[in-house]
Amino acid sequence: MEESVSIVIPVYEEEESLPLLYKSIKDVMEGLGRGYEIIFVDDGSKDRTLSVLEEIQKKDGNVVVISFRRNFGQTAAMAAGFEYANNDIIVTMDADLQNDPNDIPTLLEKIKGYDVVSGWRKDRKDKFISRRLPSMAANWLISMVTGVALHDYGCTLKAYRKEVIKNVKLYGEMHRFIPALASWVGASITEAETTHHPRKFGRSKYGIGRTVRVVLDLITVKFLQSFSTRPIQAFGPGGLVLGLAGFLISLYLSFEKIFLGQDIGGRPLLFLGVLFMILGLQLVVMGLLGEMLARVYHESQGKPIFTVKKILGR
Ligand code: UDP
Ligand code: MG
Image (cartoon, rainbow, N blue to C red; front, side):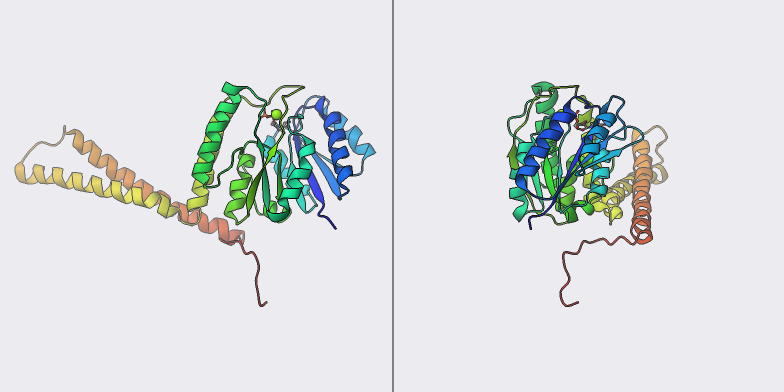
């Protein structure tokens, strides 16, 4: 028996694309002859998206529609889809026909030896300055910082094994970091080239501001990866160095004042010494607070600080 597939699609105001998208996914999936479901998550659209989806769902038992009360964003929509997905493999794709359902069989073939297959829009059909250029920079930065090198983090068309995705918690706009998050819990990852089409209907939901949000989310993700179970190690070293430097500066000034009788009230160095000491203390205390938070997080929820693949002899 081939593994069954859940296709998760975040939808925000894409009324024109949906009938075409649905038909083309259905054709591809029926051709494969695997068990499948299509989960549309309507992210609080104000156009006719929901009624179009209701029409589709009425006629097809393989279709599930989740409708949000308001617009929560693409990450939340995808997380909802994961929550309700029942099948072995989860495929995510955009609703705007920019991803091509004909690539789904390629992803399903490739995932046989892996936990995650990431789509790569090699010939991407978006504007260069506002889209492809920032995306190239983002992919380079994300690959470098997370240590998981991919050509196209931003491509929604990806496939995941269910066990992997159920271990990944999403916040903010972190859907694009799923491969990195998955890799950190031990998943194996590969890429597959996918086709990309220009947007036919409606307009993109994002502007250039997305770049800033991606960078901020990247900082969060990196911090959590490196230090979530040992925050004092992130803040402590800087705190100690600054504190020590501040202390030495103050010691030197005290020496001049007490033994050489010099005025130190107007010396810029005095401010620097005081600043360093306060900053140093604050960083160390922040690290200690982080240590307490880490314990509250893990112990109150019974969350282990590791992930187990299997246990032998039990
Ligand atoms: N989307 C969503 N909620 C949002 C914004 C976007 O569910 O708040 C969906 C949108 O309908 C599309 C996908 O996320 O299916 C990607 O959005 P878009 O095509 O606008 O992004 P782009 O391709 O321009 O990067
Ligand atoms: Mg798009």
